[in-house]
Length: 629
Image (tube, rainbow, N blue to C red; front, side, top):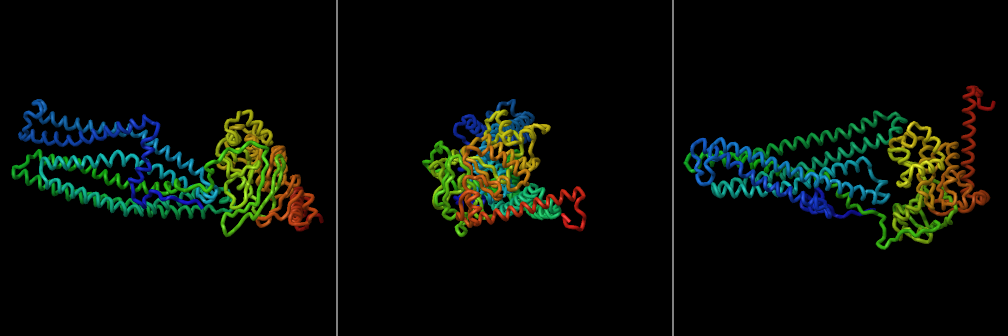
């Protein structure tokens, strides 16, 4: 199983570690324009903070001017000493500060969005690099939610850590210096104690809310997963009339989300209330100290107003510290699973000295292959066979014999535990996965199409193919005529997972896609087993054309589709029980012959039933009497 490395998450509570991980995305290599934006945004932010600290001074001077207590001769020009002018300067300074903040946000917007985009891209690419085992165990709805919340959490951390935490600390230090210089130690002490108590309470309360937030996220993921799973299985729900059951399952998950979300908002209310109480106490103490100083004649009314204004101004970054901490912690919770996802290691990777698969005729060999998905349950036990270049070999056997595992090992979705799989004598573990898969074409049993046009789905085999090549591939797959009769032709949308097309039509699109790819090796993994007999014969005709002169590995359940194979290998319990041509295996009278006879009897019974139904439609069969009487 894929292992996991230690990762930064909400559990670790390490914003600094997260920032270190995110730094390359905020300061991207080769993007001088984005680096310049970061520098300019930081400059404007610091400048705005310095200007903001000057705002209360104009308020103080204006108040003293109105009381005739302003003594600024020699400091400010005479024309600036009027109360009206000072009030105008007060508001003008505040306006400049607001403008600088908006300019900062505008500059940093593209930096934050670039970081989000790059991390989302990295996560998407990483998911495609993970091995098949991971994707077989994944929940699509849950993964999409993890990525959605994770990218938003990343944006939050990027913005608030860089642009707010450090400047807020700077503002507090400068405010403390102003209090010390103007009013003495006790004002600094009360300010420091208030800020410390405020931050301590915010951290403790936010940590308490993290568990509630995580519970809400889990409920949200569960509800989203159930909704997507139910909608993807729309037809199955309809078949069994289980709409009410699905709605109840979804509602049960949403009820959990409702409870958790309510707790999140309630806890936020308590957090805000506690912050208000702490700051209110500190502000009251400071204002009482200043009022007493005014009564003693040590301060002016302007000083009283100045202290209040500076405190109120400090409350904004203090409130923002609480908001920033909460957002960072919640962001860490949101990206916890995304970080874990990025740390999941691929089970199958290219070896350090892997080379592209050398071009060859496409001969396949399985040499004493042993494989198990679970160590306690071996699937293949010493399987050895060859598929000569240009020949067709079929793999048949009962369900669970290991037939489909053969194709997965050839594609190197998994690595063998013992033995080797080679193409033209080259071990598939020693070549790059990209070059290996480029020479193999697959027509699976259950073809899943992209929710796009028919042309897009066919061209997926070779994205650079021209429209003429797409049409030619469709004609070879015997679906060209059908497509041209559609109102929108090749531009017809196939719907989610190709649900607008029938099973046979989807298989033909899959065949056309493989034809367009043009691989020397072809795998037909029970490509017709899910189709009716008539459609199977039509699809088989197209497959015969496609597989001509190609090395073809056929994994089949219906033995009638492999009677012309150059060799048939019969698997039983992960071992080769029989091998030979169809005729030779029938003559042996073993497992293959037994399977053939059972399928032939089932086919005859199916044909008899079809004839009965046709006669019934024509009124030939009388009710209550066996057919043929």
